[in-house]
Image (cartoon, rainbow, N blue to C red; front, side):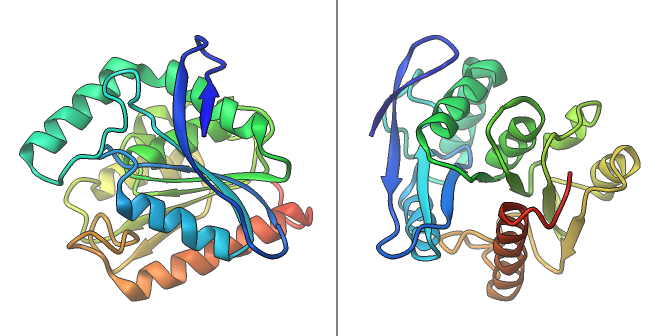
Length: 222
C-alpha cells in the first residue's frame, strides 16, 4: 500500500494485511532496523489472524526503497545510519499517516527501533488506543515524555544491549507503566531471529492482546 507522510508528503510503502474474520481494530506494526523483512510480514500476518488490520510501514523508504537487510554487520550499520537519516519527526509523521488511514480503535507495537517508535507514538501521535513496545533500547532517552495512552513494555533479562540501568531509568520516571522482564535475550519475540524464545514470546503476546482488548473496552487507563 502506498501512503503519503503527514510529516513531509513523502510517499512510502506499507505492508497491509486485513483479518479474514471479525475485525478487532487497526494495528501499526513497526520494524526493527532491518526493514520490513519476511519475519516482520509474518508477524503482521499473525496479528491479522488475531483480528487486527495491520500496517507495517517501510520506515526507511526515504533512504532505500523496500529495505530488507540481513542481520550482519553491514545490515546493522545501514539500519543505524538510516535511523539517523530519517530522524524521529519524519518517522512519527509516517506513523501518524498509518494511524489515520486505519479505522479505530488503533494500536501500535514495535520491536527494537520499532519499540522506541511505539513509545514516542504513544507520547506524540493522536488517534491511538494503546501501545505495546518490545525491547526499545532508545526509550530510556525519552523518559521526559509521557504517554497519552496505556503502554506496556517488554524486555529480556539477558539482553546485553539494554541493561538494568536503561530499564531502571524508565521505571523511575514512569512507575505506573508496566515493564515486563523475561528470561530471554534481545529479540525474543521475532521467530526468525537466533534469539527467538517461544515461551516469553507467547506470554508477551498474550499480554499485548489483553492490553489491546481492555483498552478498546475502556477497562484500562493511561
